[in-house]
Image 1 (cartoon, helix red, strand yellow):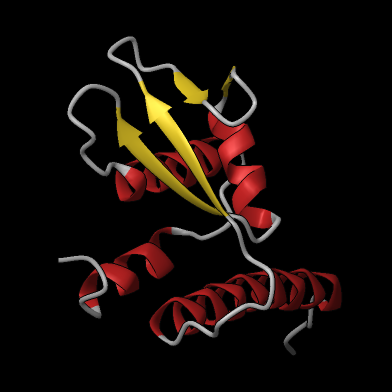
Image 2 (tube, rainbow, N blue to C red):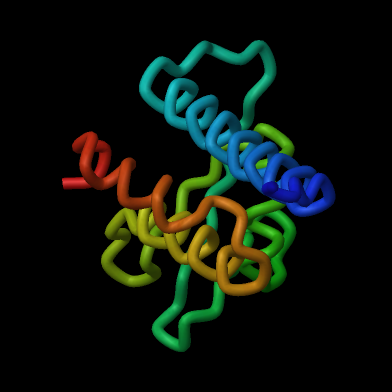
Length: 124
């Protein structure tokens, strides 16, 4: 006769729910990025990146961190990061660096979701 380990099944269900929630969030982000909706009040914040890799906010005249840039983005503020000197737009690389740093601290997206993003052609 087979014994059913209900606690093990419950743990597996909770783990699956967590993974599903992560995938649902990733899907929502992908849909939002691929179908952006105009926001009522959204300001652009210019950030300069110096040769020493420091980020500078000329609006408030002080250095900011990647965490600050992430917070601006969470608050709905469009951020444009430009390399000081030649003015090359490095916003995408900076945002990718933020995602990578946050994944190192606390993996939430997972390898499957990242691989799916690459496979779907969002990243060439």
